[in-house]
Structure formats: structure tokens, C-alpha cells
Length: 479
Image (cartoon, rainbow, N blue to C red):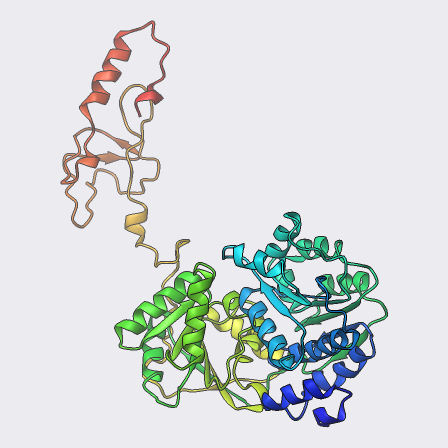
């Protein structure tokens, strides 16, 4: 089937030709005609399958056919992230370039001034993230009472990000009589329940289920210790065939560390994540799309909705804790029928995650065994809550002085030292102390760091307290 065979008006057909579109993807072929006929629709398809065009084309054509160009917002599209919202708005502009339909995008993280000024002009299609839209509704800058087309894009991601309550509030502001479209890569029970309340006898379209991966994506797996992942990444980047590389990190802090290490190895790169300003994220994305930067390091939230042409490689530096996220990540490459490569790093602690991923996609990922950093049998260093390796036990169990009573003695509550032996810690010099069980028998602390010295003022205050039998002050005041 070709786009020319669909009932699409000439102006949109011309715009699609300019974009190089000739043959619709499966989700487009199955969704466009029912939407042109006015049906509600649930579309279940993984990222990169052309969902945006599937609903944007019918909306643009519907608004164009009514010729009702006034100051009312006629279509609302909700997206979970800024990047996806921007991408959707760009698609509306591209497909509607020969129409007079006006679209704008609003999102948080930036000043609302330019957005409120744009809303004061004619707006036919509004693309928005839920939080900023709800804020502007409460400020009376947005009126949704004339909405005829409503789209929830990446509904499962909104659920994951805790946006569903905001979405429900927004739905309360739009007319009940409307055409509703819900698109999602997965269909958890909460999304199914939501769809039952907001759609009217919807057509259901499901293509390329979430457990499937695009056939044009080559998948590779490297077993490597956590502390050698950056070395392996740097070695792989020596290959010029890795022309444009999107690296996934599990955390924002991890993304920044990867960028710092790569720059030290001579590989310019940039990170995008939630701690970056919107301007910085958009500038980084533009540099990557325009080939000014070869390597982009991202977290899942920041990368959601990225549409990058001719992305050669996706590297999963950290395996995701949710198996479905693996499919979303590698789906950033191999888009629009192009080929791509997805490379995953797996350390000892991630083998369980790998097992879940391979169970989901119903295939084993090809293992690359001959590389300079093969995994060892020893597990990776334990991680502390702050993300770094834990200190050796002798440091974490170092006895600390703690007042026991008003007699001035100290209770070493965590001491596990042999009796009658001095404590010896590297770079420390504690002398004159004899430990018996958990009590210090005698001696003063001698240490190069004055923080370990027992202040004389405490002794003087305690002595004063003992002499003053009428005092009701507790010795805890001097601890």
C-alpha cells in the first residue's frame, strides 16, 4: 500500500512526498483510515513505528476540512516529555506545511512567557506536557472547551512517570463529545482501565508488540565487569563505523560520569537528563542530530521520544531494570526501515536482568566473546547508597567515642576488637588505649586530627555538674 492509495488530501500528500514518505508503516496503514472516518482508536505499537503520523495526518485533515480558523484550540496532544512534545509539534508542522493549520508546543522547565504569548494568538493544535498545561489552565491562559481531537501519546510512560492524575484532571476540562486516540507501547492494566473511561467504542490496532524487536537491528552483548565498562566503550568508539552513538545510562549521575570519562579519552560527548535545563538539552540534541557531536549519553526519561535519523548505534551501558525498556532503547536505531546496531554491556550483577530481557524478546542476544575486557568470576565491587564502592569493613566499623553516663566513661557500642589490644588504623596513631570488651579503661586520644581529641571543656563541665548536687541538667547536654 502507498500513501497515495489512502484518502488523504493533496496538500498533505505533497508534504509527505517532501519528507520522502511513500509507503505507510503498519500502524499508519491500519490507523489512518478509521481515524479519518471519525472513530476513536487505541494504538499499541513500539517506539519508532510511525505513530505520530498515524494520528497527526487525520487531525490535520479534519481541521482543514472544517475551515473553522478561529481562536479556539481544536486538537490537544499530551506527551510525557519535553523532547517528545517538541518532536510531535515538528511533525505537525512538517505534514501541515501546505495548510493553514497552526500548532504550538508548551512544556515545563522554561519561562512561560513565550508560551502564553503564543497561546494568545490563533492555535489549532496544542501539543503539551501535562504539568505545564495544567498550570496554564489554572492561570486561565488555556481554554480547552472546544477540543474536538484528543490524543494521549506514550500513555504507558505517563503512567510510569506519575502523570496519570494530571491527565485525568485535564480530561475534565475537555468536551465529552470528541474523537479520542490513545497510543502506547505497552498496555498495563491501569492504562486499559483509563481507556475504558475516555474512549467510545474504539478501534484497536496492535502491531509489532513490545516483546518484539525490529528485524533490521543487529543485537550484540558484551560480558564485562562494571569497572571496565568505560574502557570497553572507549575501545569500541575507535571504530569509525560507530558514526552516531546514543549511550544509555541508568542514572543522571552515571551519565555525567560517562561523559567526563569519554572526554578524558578524547571523545567529545554530551549528556541529556532531567537535571539539565531545557535549553541545554535541546542544544545538545540539535548538535547530535546535526552531526556536530558524535556521542550522546542519555537516561531513559530524557531519551523518550527522540527521533534521530540514521542513528548507527545504541549502546546500553547499563541494562534496564524493566525488560520492556530494552525494546524501547534499541528502538532508537533501525528506524524507518534503516539498519542499526544495539550493543549491551552486562556485568555479574546484571545477569538476572539479561535473563528477563531475553525471556521477553524470546531470543538470545549474540555474545561477543573476544574482547580485551572479559568478565571475571569476581563480582563487581559493592555499591553504597551514594553510588560509590563501599569502604572496607575495618573503616566502617571503626569504634566511635560515645558518652555512656555522667561518669565520663565512653561506650564503644560497635567495637568488635580483641580484648587488651590497641586499635591500629592506617595513617592513624591511637596510643594509650586498652580495650576490654566495649569500655575504654584509660588513656587519652592522640591523633594528628584534632577532631579526635577529647575536649577538656567537657571534663570541666562534668566535674562542675558532679559538684552541684542540686543541678537537674543531664550529662547529654555535654555530649
